[in-house]
Length: 114
Image 1 (cartoon, rainbow, N blue to C red):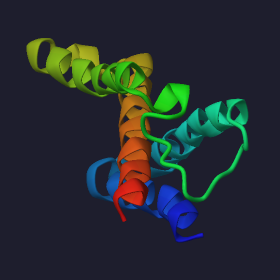
Image 2: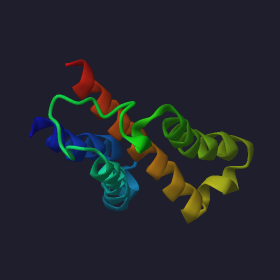
Image 3: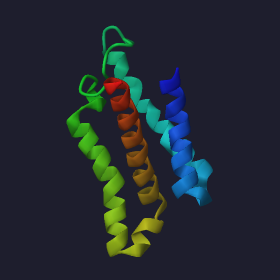
């Protein structure tokens, strides 16, 4: 139960710290990335409290996580080279999706090591 609550509160804390002017939209995007857990439906059993999601479920493996890093980082890198780039709504949303997915993976990883 604590794990599930963290998937809502950690994104809220992040948006209040870094995206305050658009906190509601940013929080909704970050929370919507919980849909990545749809890959749990491919597992048998669907829920196993002792199973580590990282490395087991398809969207929780190294290659997708690398894509999440790119989704988060590329808009930041590009905005330093071309500041007008970061003002585009799609770019900002992709950046937030990457951030939400990375937060999700970190929280799932913490669940694995504790």
